[in-house]
Image 1: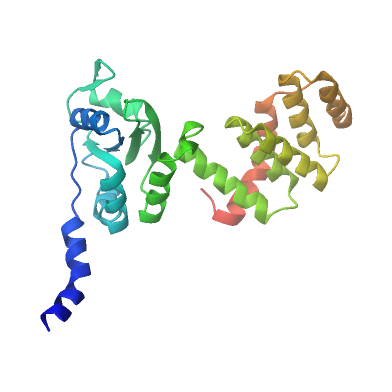
Image 2: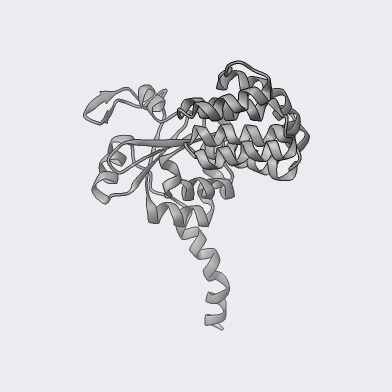
Length: 259
């Protein structure tokens, strides 16, 4: 009987035993991460931030999150509005400055630092457990060398849209632009070419290819695409993206709602 009772209670007891993480201050965290060769996760919060409290009470209590954090990360919390200075990379910076270094644009914000103190990137806002686990996996991978998690999520969303609306040439070009931002040139060109398979005269795809060929010095191929687009010169990436933005927003709102 005792064994049966223990077997029934063991999972709940295990969760109870693991539901509290050990948080250091930023200085302690930077030191420990360097000593242990681990990634430092910094939770940037404020007293008035409601979503910070929700994240503490839900995401950071999830057993899967706790297990991953305890195995692979050093944890630190900092309130940029109250806490003292941080010794970062040999310089003393204020808590507010350290929040800026950690990519904080609002609260909550989760910053990730390599064991040598270099800033890797951030995951902005409240993240439920599944999304947070995705962020933890991301920053443990080599993907973090090319982009931060917020950019990764945007790219993933753009890819989902272009796969669902696979006859929308504009979505192919937007995805290609994002791929160029993270230096995935082959995938970018493939997306531009896919847009031309959908619509062989689509000017934004032609101009994107022309712009790319201009930047890598392939003048003949640039001129060929410009001639097809009926243009005498390239127009720049910003102009291409601005022309595509309304179309991208239309599909985004259709799929995810306004926001």
